Image 1 (spheres, one colour):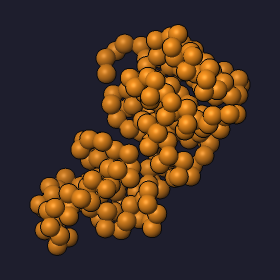
Image 2 (tube, rainbow, N blue to C red):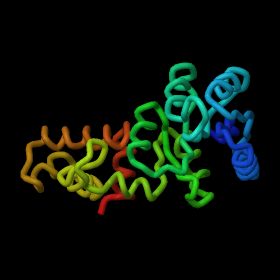
Image 3 (cartoon, rainbow, N blue to C red):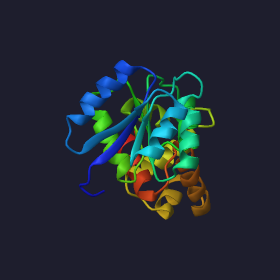
Image 4 (cartoon, rainbow, N blue to C red):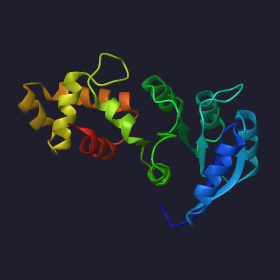
Length: 206
């Protein structure tokens, strides 16, 4: 990411929330809030009028919700990154948001610096989750969008910098099986590149 100003569109149906976000973000020289919207259709209209790099999107909105709006944004403006900012910490919302095309998910009660880090991470090509969500995503659970105990083991070995061959040897698996686990982990967590997977593993594997 260059040092150019990141142009942001705020989408939340509460004007007071938008005012607070605008004040917080515009206190930082690297951010510029170029537009606001209270709903999906207005947000799409504003994105067509202004040069926008990133949309900060709430989920709970009247009419089209933020997850549906994210999918519409990715269809209409694939270049624009979408970052979810929500009070909901359910993993099903996180999974749906990432599948819709969001590049990250920040909780509204997270520390203020999280939004700054999230925006910069997303604009650098990464994916960002609030720490509380990242911990949940890494926990072994029997749900489709969460990691199995074996995937959790593989994640720990990835965090140690081990290759697929080394992991296969340590867990008595074939290299092909380890590769499959890696792909499943990335799919479940909404992670694309190897570097992002390693970063997530180092930060969250236990």
